[in-house]
Length: 122
Image (cartoon, rainbow, N blue to C red; front, side, top):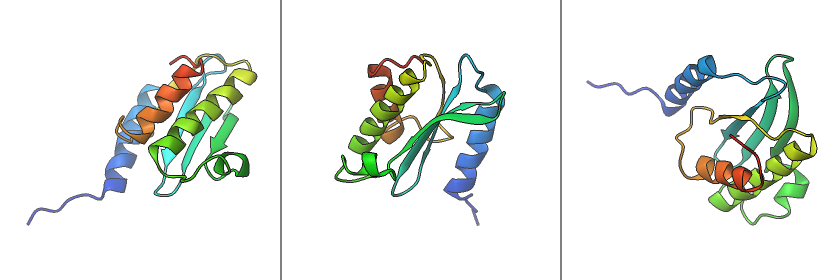
């Protein structure tokens, strides 16, 4: 009988492989993305100092009020623009993109493209 691993375990293993190759610095922090079934979260992290510089999610009142749904591609695009604006306000223009083990399509791709359109470089 074939036993399949759960999707969560597969994603977490991919994420650990990705994280072994990249990390954020103070000059070029890491843009980390996580998505659950209902919401998306994005944060810009300086791994050397171990602190979060900028964060945004669809659970915030300001973001949620602009969206009809918090779990679709449109929500991901809006979150990408929000995180890019907040990051640029902090004076950070270049980041390393950490997709969190998720496949680069759909919501993750929409968030990344929207952040690039706002002027964030990665």
